[in-house]
Image 1 (cartoon, helix red, strand yellow):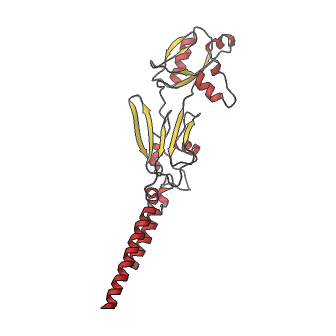
Image 2 (cartoon, helix red, strand yellow; image 1 turned 180 degrees about the vertical axis):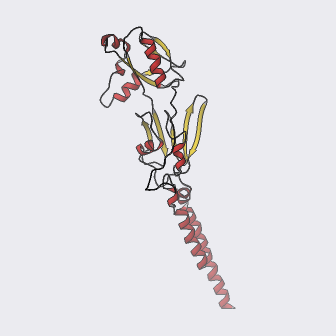
Image 3 (cartoon, one colour; image 1 turned 45 degrees about the vertical axis):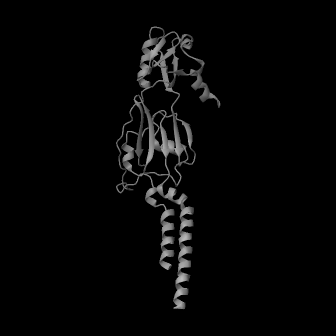
Length: 262
């Protein structure tokens, strides 16, 4: 009887405990205090897709008045709480043909190009109109979504074109202690559809991953630890264990009564 109770107590602790190895990021035996460890990685430049929104700001020190013709109001610097929404609504949306429509220039193919390549293409398109033109192209629709076991899930606008996995997780308030750091899911849109990959935040090799740098419309999903799932079922286990314990007590009483009569 005492063995059964001891087993139930040990099982309850095993279900409810989370080990330190499940919570610590970037675990490594080679990182030390003497010298930093290098992790080589290179960010692949994002190529603009259909439905992306970009801003194009054109200026010319030689002819600032003429440069205004090529700009929308949304491409001027915005201030205030509605700046983000204004830029999105009045920015240039890439149509189904992969193009944007610029004043005077007309349709300009941008799908499949990087921001730097689009900047060069715009500069070439306006060279006959403006002298020494300066072109600045930026992504407006660089948004990522964080779901699951984080302290502040939601959509986050990214203003850094080299935003990393840990930066966005930090924006979301970090993972809760219930989050599975070894099986984080990253969903990414591609020209062929959608791809899903599992990332291990406890492994330093994640710093070398092609998915370490985020891209527009990435979705990060943090699933709960298996121990947390088991913990949520603990009331059920407790009820079952209590039933077994009660039956064992009854059986023990019956056996003791029979032994006394014999």
